[in-house]
Length: 183
Image 1 (tube, helix red, strand yellow):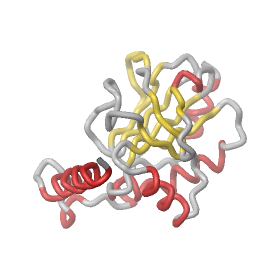
Image 2 (cartoon, one colour):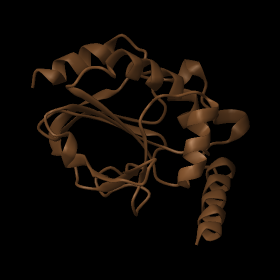
Image 3 (cartoon, helix red, strand yellow):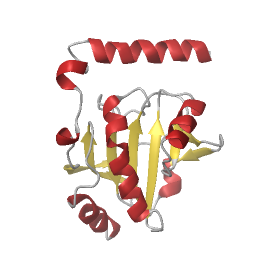
Image 4 (cartoon, rainbow, N blue to C red):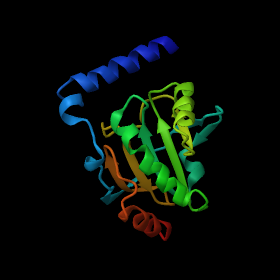
């Protein structure tokens, strides 16, 4: 099963890199200049239920983080844009990690747990990283882009999102988080 998953992930990554619909290394690889801040949603959408595991294998649900602002990021070690934005996510996490009203869920859907652990340790990230239980991304959060990040208010409503690489060090992001903490 693990080797099939590795083959499937590799094939998917090759598809993304080599296809016109995906990234072309020479023309469309993300750079620090192409990172953007999240976009506020005009409509209230309830975040879907889904299950994910921490690096120790313990099962979690999004509902455990109710009454907190959740920064939910779907990523993969194979995704150039995901790797590019990770330092800015780490900087945002460093700012809020001690805030009991903010939670970070950095969730990989297509990586084996050991690959995520190695990535995290090698780059010395302290972000809490998780693995999706089943599907690459839950229905309702499957916008197609990798990475994809959602800011969810304490009532479980998706208030902002960004499909693609984000600049989480942008000054507008903490302002948005502070606003969501008051909802």
